[in-house]
Length: 246
Image (cartoon, rainbow, N blue to C red; front, side, top):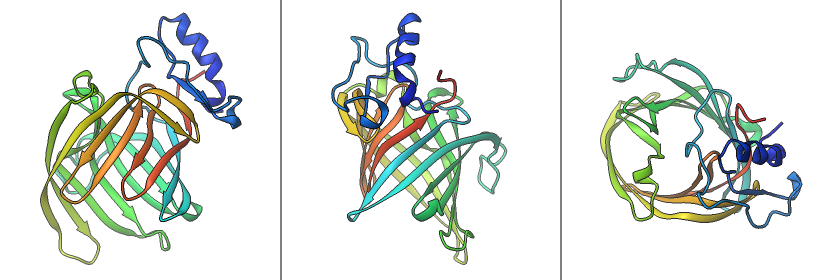
């Protein structure tokens, strides 16, 4: 059972505990009209990306006019492994599957930053061939690559900062490569309204990430996670299952 289908009960529970609901109005398939959002004066509460084993998000992907599905699931806590500098650290094994029959798969090891639990960082990632299932590419980063920073100072409008790390690529059959990556993050809005298949959400954080060759934008909501992403393709939240929800 998903969080969306139990949202009314969750709202009552959170209000009783002195918290605020995630400001979502479910779409027609979840018993709502898909318009507006309840919200509260304090906005939604909780981490920008709920990070716990078993949490799962499903997205509708649109690229070049073609739509498909993508799922991201947080698995168990394991050693990062591989040959990078973080091989002995413990992180959650995250599986992302997309495309026809969800055959296009990546596996990554991500965790909360030991120095700042509001930051989710990525240590290592494996990409597999969608047809054969064989490993195509291994990547790791030094220092770890930022997934999202939900700290108060970096979720307010106009906040901007630079992330720098070394990226190592081990492509099967080719020589290893590495290069420095510099990414500029900026908060474009801290009170955005976003409409996606999962519903209409208020009080979202709208971020932009500019790299050397790509620009992406993200919309996140505290207590829910990523609602939408644009760039080379568009990802829109269809459903989500968060462990610990009623």
